[in-house]
Image: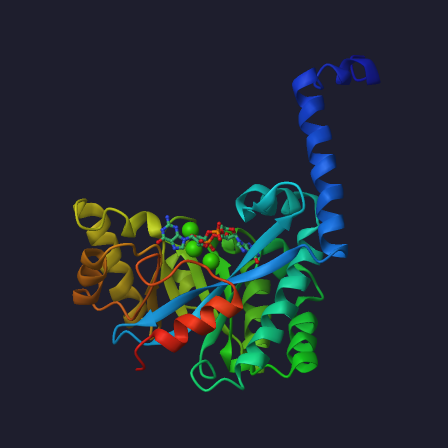
Length: 279
Ligand code: C2E
Ligand code: CA
Ligand code: CA
Ligand code: CA
């Protein structure tokens, strides 16, 4: 008897109303951002243990006309909720492939992988494999240099479907990195069935790797696990030489973090590559 419209209204207080209209405004803003080309990709260097530039991670930036550069942390979760992540993700994929094809002509950058973050909702969309395929074809980017970063949240349901989709993309030549590894839900029995290329040690373990024995043990375990499964392993959020040293002694293959470079525009990255020692 209480299930009428009026009794349900009590869930929507003024705070909730404000939250909802803020979200609606953000959604409209995001649509405009897509239409008016306010998004750009920045690229953060990834280096090998020998110090050579081996890849970059593409990170989304929103150059907002009033608010300046807006962090993806403030709009990606909203875009995941309202579905706009599908359009945004498509834009990111195309922009990253376009950049990859451009760098194929630059000697120092030609062999570099480009890692692209893919939201679970985007990956699960039925058109995703076709979209990757057409982005590669349209731009002429080399599939073996494209790496998709997935998170463990993708493994929460219907793992079989995820594996089938990953295999289809692997067959195209695309690689996979499991991002933020160790922070989410990951069953080791699933892990060995995923056609992965790389594990990415989450920066929350890297931060205190020198002072917290638990974090040190976790980092070493992830490195050993990756190598046992025949995968390479990269650490993110490396800010100090001491962190890099510890990880290097533990056998880590690659590094990403402010120690090597912040996310930068494609033009800045060119400069970085020019100044970097080649290996
Ligand atoms: P993430 O994938 O874990 O990316 C790493 C984040 O750590 C980036 O933040 C990067 O700028 C930052 N970072 C890199 N090195 C260091 C370091 O040494 N120290 C510290 N403290 N931070 C470092 P950013 O660019 O703000 O991105 C935040 C998150 O937004 C990303 O986390 C990712 O989950 C999401 N994101 C970014 N671009 C995209 C995209 O194109 N698509 C999707 N779906 N998500 C994206
Ligand atoms: Ca990432
Ligand atoms: Ca990450
Ligand atoms: Ca992270």
